[in-house]
Image 1 (tube, rainbow, N blue to C red):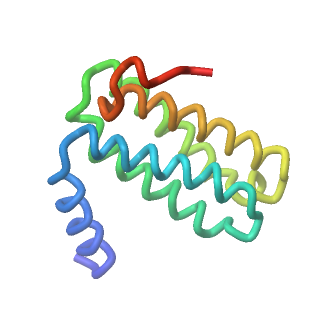
Image 2 (image 1 turned 90 degrees about the vertical axis):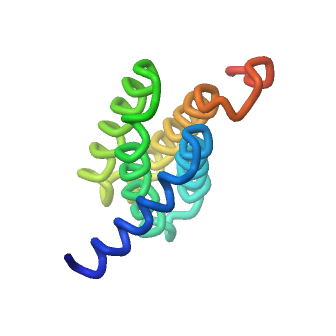
Length: 126
C-alpha cells in the first residue's frame, strides 16, 4: 500500500469515529469552503482538493445515512464528479465558477438540514 493510501485509510478511520451528524457537518463545511474559494480565482487547486475530499466524505458516510439522505448524497456525488471532469474550464470561467459556488451553497444547506445538527425550526430555506 502506498503512503498516500495509508494516509487516506487513517483519515477514513478517524472520520468514521464521528457520529453521522458530525460527518454530514464536515461535508457541509467543505461545500461552504467551495463557495468561499470561488470568490478567489487563485484558489483553484485548494477548491479541487476540497471537491475530492468531499467525494470521500460522501463515500464514507452514505451507507450509514437514511435512504433519502443516501439518494441526495449520490446526487451530490455525481455533481462533484462532473465538476472534477471539467474543473479547469469551470474555474477559468467566472460565471461557471459562480454557478458552482451557488450550487455548493444550496447543497450545503440541504445537507445541513438533513444532518440533525440543527433543530428543525432553525432551518429556513430561502
